[in-house]
Image (cartoon, rainbow, N blue to C red; front, side, top):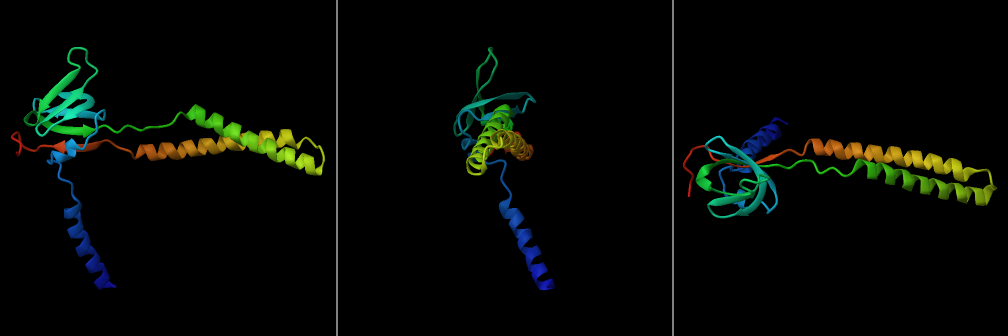
Amino acid sequence: MRRILVVGLVLLSFCGQSLAKDRQDWSRVEKLKPGAKVLVTLWTGEEIAGRVDSVGQGSLGIRTSSSWKPLQRFARAEIQAIVHLRGPKLPDPDRWMRDGALIGGAVGVTSGAIQDATQGNNGRVLTHGLAGAGLGFFGSCAAMAGVGAVALVHHDRLVYEEKTRSHRP
């Protein structure tokens, strides 16, 4: 048992170094798609938020919401860090709850209609329809809670960071 534990710890110590991401690798910036939200920190301390317009070998162009300078280009030497802003992409909760209630209600009405047709008319269409709508609503609420929990762990990602002012070619 100790031998397995020792081998596992040795393997983990080597895996950590091989899995570490090089934040000074410009190719990670080149993989950003046009339109991706980014936050660029310059060596002057200025932070500019915008969407990627173009990425070249030694430059980055972003579109900002500023009317003064809507398109800004930066040389790689000017950039200290780039963060990919990956905000949560949550669906419309009103639509999910409405659709869940409608689908549940339709299933309940269908179930009640089938029971009324086979066992006599006792008003099961209404009671099953109401129960199905309630269950569908609560089911969609639970699904939205799950989607929200997943969105909580969907963080921004540091794509590029230069430790010293002069960059590597």
